Amino acid sequence: MVADRYGNPLHECTPETAAHLDRAVDSLLHFSPEVVQAVDDALDSAPTSPVAQSFAAYLGALGTEPDDALAARQRFDRYTAGVDVSSLPVRERLHVAAAEAWLAGDLLRAGGLLEELSLLCPRDALALAVGHQLDFFTGDAVRLRDRIGGALSAWDTADPHRGLVMGMYAFGLEESGHYRLAEEAGLAAVEQDPRDVWAIHAVVHTYEMQGRVSEGIGYLDARREDWSRGNYLDVHNWWHYSLYALEAGDFGTALSIYDAALHNDESAGVAMELLDAAALLWRIRLAGGDSGPRFEALADAWAARADPPFYAFNDVHAVMSYVGAGRLGEAQRLVADRRRWLAEGGPDSVTNRRMTADIGLPVCEALVAHGQGRHATVVELLRPLRRRLHEFGGSHAQRDALQKTLLDSALSSGRHELARVLISERTGLRPDSSYNWGARARLADALGDAAVATAARDHARDATAAASGTLLASSLHADTGTPSGESDR
Image (cartoon, rainbow, N blue to C red):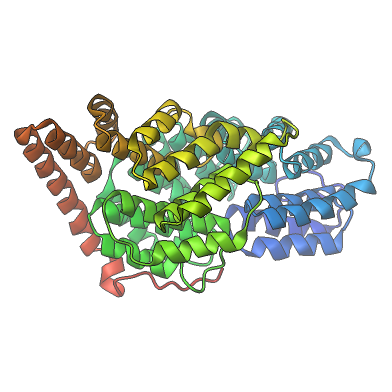
């Protein structure tokens, strides 16, 4: 019997194929671009392998790229047309069913099938990793945590890949609000495997969500050689660095990171990178900063994609870019296109239909209204959604741009009581955030309370100074002042 490194039997596989699949799973867990070649090698050596075929299908969907998903679906359909799926062993049958569901647009069913698979095979690292990403794309924080937590006891502490499983668990803990446990799990995972960029990312999230800016900068600096290049997550982790720079009041450093790592003339133009770029520029816009011509170039990149309806989270960031560039007509055309798509009808099993109807469209409309200065409309659209935004995916840190948009419009439209509540909520979670104290000062100004405004600005200044001191001492400035921008991606 041929089995993978975790002891799972492999149907229709040779030892050579098993080695390729082991290499592919290792690359997937490390977010290494090598995963593509490893899966291709597995398919070349065993084209009828259900696990290899399912793995290739997963890769086609993971990047949220419509063209890649379409190509993967066509290839997978050719495979399934020639095989009796019902005769496959249960593990392979569930992988094939999950891949088929995801390529058909049913992310929830795909995630559920992989959860069923993890019940039977808790040491199937491919099922855990892909299911974990599906939980992220659907914004299911509880399942993001418990899918991994439920399998963890099957992983012996001596297993070198247990740390990578712990890294996934750390992110699920963080998104569920268990920040201390998440930090501990993430640090332990990185200690076991310094190249675990997802675990590094989880630790960074815990600091972001608690407003521990100096610690976040210090941690990213200390691990910079492990995360900053040559993996699919390097741009996103640079984005996190730029968020810390904004909290330090350093727009210059944030924009330097943007130019070198997030978006430039050499960028591939993939959705995952463009949405990080849009999310940073939108935050700078909300803070009253000037990003120069960057929004215009970013809007061009989104327009060149001409994406069909595929993932509402991406649509929102495209609209951010259009609105930031002052191209409201293009933003409105995207909204109209998605509205037509919903009106045409289609299977309810397509997860993006619900995401678009319930969250994506009203959020896009709110962003357009913000660009038009119609702040009362922004509040009307976003306030009912503020505790439901997770339903269209992403992390708390990513969705915070929308929470800040709501707060900005509450202040701008004179909704002082709502602004007070929003600021109070934020300050309770991040008491040392310069942004939160700045918002409190802005509210106090609107209410004519000069003493409170002055005290809040003092708090904001102290928080900015603490973060700024750490940033100025960081390796980012000590080396060249900007990230190198070099990548093996």
